[in-house]
Image (cartoon, rainbow, N blue to C red; front, side, top):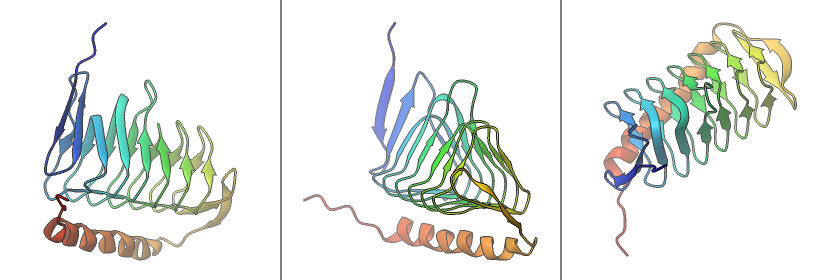
Length: 187
């Protein structure tokens, strides 16, 4: 068996074709120079992928919705027949692992959280920092879960959308700033 793989750099970003599947990147997307995007990955308009993050769509597709941000050192990966679908206006905090699951629109995945295969994080929900969402666990909508394993803590007022949008807006500002102002040293 011969595997074909093309690695190319697009403005200092590593974009990797895998088994004939190339990442699809929307308009006004920011991909940090040390991020790696591999295979069947779609980044919608306005998405951002930050330093050290890896999105590896080798077993199934990964979709990141509009204006969603995948922060530094995150891992987004799939298993066979277990894609990752991250909705619009989602914040995935530093060092989170999002694996073979669905995160609907306007959610916050806290720093260092882990979401396992077939879990569903429904709209407006928050997974607290360091929490582990078990396989096939459903969260929300508008729920806060915490702990290892993640357990329901409380229901969130739908007005949480405004607070969660603040995180998205902050990363949208950073996305624009980094797109326009980052310089890669040749030394």
